[in-house]
Length: 67
Image (tube, rainbow, N blue to C red; front, side, top):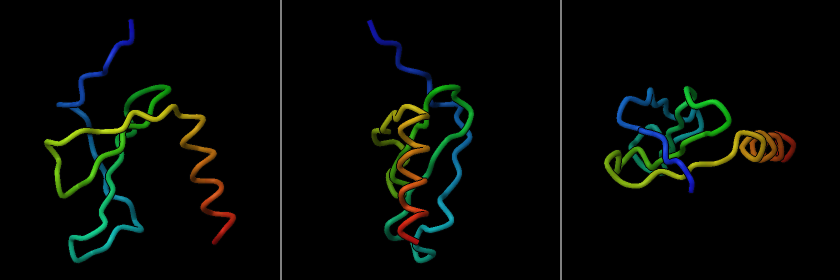
């Protein structure tokens, strides 16, 4: 059975690439070993994606390569 982490105490930070006018905003929480929770900052009570840390690193790395 999978364990879903408790996200109510997560320390969320907004992506530096998010729109400063409130649109297209993504937040991540860094305090979950092995996982990167990701959510829409406009809907903080909504669902969060739980992405394995290795997959998140690969995703971010590919974005940096596209520059």
